[in-house]
Image (tube, rainbow, N blue to C red; front, side, top):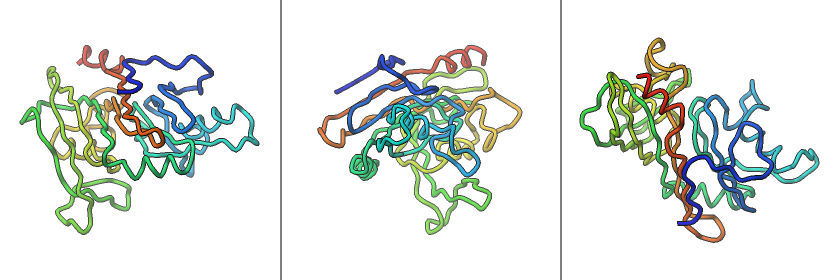
Length: 235
């Protein structure tokens, strides 16, 4: 395996403010995004995003620079963890075309105790006019989505779960666990607004993919976030 990094060991050079660079070469950027930061701009917020910060970083502060980064995938604003960006259109195209083969693992703290302790949640996911995602029995209306999980630890009223994201739909993990009766802790949209931590307890822990140009297998793993450790201690 090429470039396996355990824990947050940033590359020692100029860092973009608010993001940790795990790997950079001429084709790709792998970063760790904190909870609360948008991946890409919305109509209301175009500047304070991972995309904006990385564009500024690759341009080294020169607004006339032609350097830019391309969004390959997204994480919800309140989800922390690994984000992969391309530095060219061909690199972006390759990574997106091979996204189904990209291995994506998450950690989540969810309400309650799951039965069974290991399994797969599958449903067709659709989105309503209020941008709320839900499962539908109508395969023509929704996209078939699969979330594999394994319980790692149980505390009073909560479970630490490792998730293998087999498909990557919007809010997929949050909806699948909420509909199973075990919403992600801190999920104000799909879970209990009043119970649990202030942050969404969902972290994109690791990613494995093929490099778009040299063909090498690449794996990055951030391990367990420090605030998850603290959170589990409190729970």
